[in-house]
Amino acid sequence: MAITRDEVRHIAKLANLEFGDDEQDRFTRQLSAILDHVKQLDRLDTSAVEPTSHAGGDPAALREDTLAPTLPRDEALANAPEADHGLFKVPRVIG
Amino acid sequence: MSGGDARDYAGDGVRALRDRIAAGDLSAAEVVEAHLGRIARVEPAIGAFLHVDEDGARAAAAAIDRDRKAGRPLGPLAGVPVGVKDILCTRGAATTCGSRILEGFVPPYDATCVARLRAAGAVVVGKTNMDEFAMGSSTENSAYRATRNPWDPERVPGGSSGGSAAAVAADEVPAALGTDTGGSIRQPAALCGVVGMKPTYGRVSRYGVVAFASSLDQVGPLANSVADAAEILQVIAGADARDATSARVPVPDFRAALGGGARGLRLGVPREYFPAGLDAEVDAAVRRALGEAGRLGATVEEISLPHTEYAIPAYYIVATAEASSNLARYDGVRYGHRDDAARDLAALYVRSRSGGFGAEVKRRIMLGTYVLSSGYYDAYYRKAQKVRTLIRRDFDTVFEKVDVIVTPTSPTPAFRIGEKVDDPLAMYLSDIFTVTVNLAGLPGLSLPCGVTGAGLPIGLQVIGRPFDEETVLRVAAAFEAAIGFRSRRPLLPERGPAAPGR
Image (spheres, rainbow over the protein chains, first blue to last red):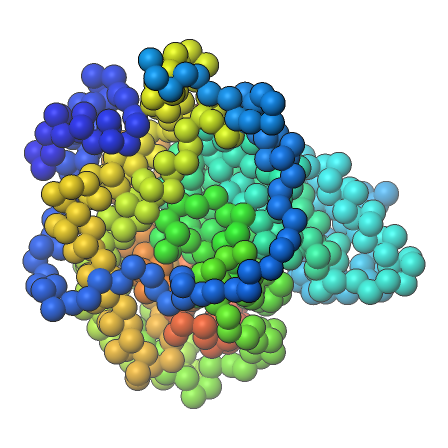
């Protein structure tokens, strides 16, 4: 197995996900199979190769900073599961 | 109201349809009614749509008819019904991205590509089904329903834009928008016997597109013909101040490119795209199409893209890494599913996400989180980005001596519903010939080039240089005319089962 059940538990925590025991077993098996497959990249010597993060485009393109209307607050809140006093409402943060 | 069927209007293409509406020969209202009628008849067997907005479509059509009567100028797609993949935000109309976590989400704005369609007069009739968050190659990962292939209802339409492809193939709409991160326009186009194009990365704005993998995602058309795909692309292409990655390059006249023919062009055929084990009927249909090249005045040359075999592993690292980051925003706070039983904020995040995402989405978030995590970043993510460079270089080298590359779109025709659903790796390999184009940011188009003995469509892929959609469209139009596939249509709804879905 390329990945252990404990690692799956750890990754789930990082990803803010939780799984039942059955799901954990299945994900461990499936992620191991996928990781075994992607390991074939190790056959390539890439020590002298620069990484590509974006194909073309210019992610650093700038535009003029001009004033324009933004989304009105009521529209921004319209999809909120819970809102109060013009704010998103959540359960308490500190238990 | 005329009782005409949508099929009566689809045959001559979207430009002819628009011109008949503009001339007053047809009303936009009767065209939209014909399509809504066809959708009502066909949907029980196909299931291409998640939402059909009859009122919105009728209102848009009525506005076109009013404009015409008032003598106001009409846009290039005036009165043309279109389907829009449910990954694209539509103002005031539900957008779920095929996921329970966005059930009930109603965007306060249109995606730029949708706004441009509307400004051109297109009538948005509804939102098409898709794999959840565009993660899948069969549309089986939709949280809402299965979509069936109009050519054989026991088979998948491909994915993730399977609803858009099936809707066009079943003549529910003459054109639709999809998105393509690793083949999600081209592969379903191939499996449903329609034309689908992924433009160059940056050609179409991603504003209002629910993000999956931001360095790979691109919006494009699915349509009945290369010319119709060009008409749609013409409208949606171009820089957008709301998407910093949209390219500040001029948009050429794609229609003008169509008649150029393939004479004098050099077509490269990469040997790595014809591996041992390639479906024999796919292999034969693609080679038969390539056999037309000489008659078209083009030359065919065998080429090599040596890093092709590494594309799927590199893709599934890059795409899942970006997805794990993009999908962190679904936390049950500002929109989407919230688990009301959570007592504190940390539990709210975990429970809302765990309850709202489907299995494939969780699998990819997990994989992406793993390859970005401390201790694995260099071994997986950085490694994959370097391999991405090698894949780009393969294309750069080859495009010094050929004008376009021609390959099969998908290694197999449409597979059976359920066949690959429990084997993620087998599903990923459906994208083996399409992911390279996304990694390199190139334009790619799939057009039908034949059918199997069992009557399933086969797709031919044409790949071009960055921002050279014109040559891709030229070559595709020349092949389309030579192959003459357009006369074939699926036989549905007569062959369809009574009720699809899960």
